[in-house]
Amino acid sequence: MSIRTCLGCRARSEPAQLVRIVANDGEAVVDLDRRLPGRGAWVHPSQQCAERALRAIPRALRQHRLDTTPIARWAQDGLDPSPDRRNERHMDN
Image 1 (cartoon, rainbow, N blue to C red):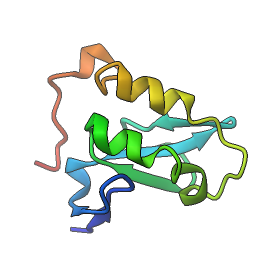
Image 2 (spheres, rainbow, N blue to C red):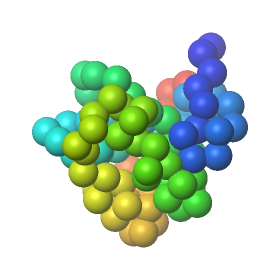
Image 3 (cartoon, rainbow, N blue to C red):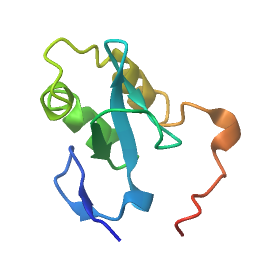
Image 4 (spheres, rainbow, N blue to C red):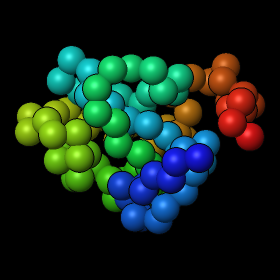
């Protein structure tokens, strides 16, 4: 099992405990299915980690002009971009 580092708190965790963020059409978006192409950044699904990661996301994704507003909204709205997936768990567990 691979270990990833949270961009917000810098703690190392298994991917099942983190959310993947990718650049998509100039915006940073949450990749719930972990299937979107490109470089990914990882963050714990907590408001504190998501907010701390906002400034580092463009650098981590190697995108100098990246809109992180969707991630800021995601953090403020309770970290659930898809309400119908709230109780769903990853098969990794």
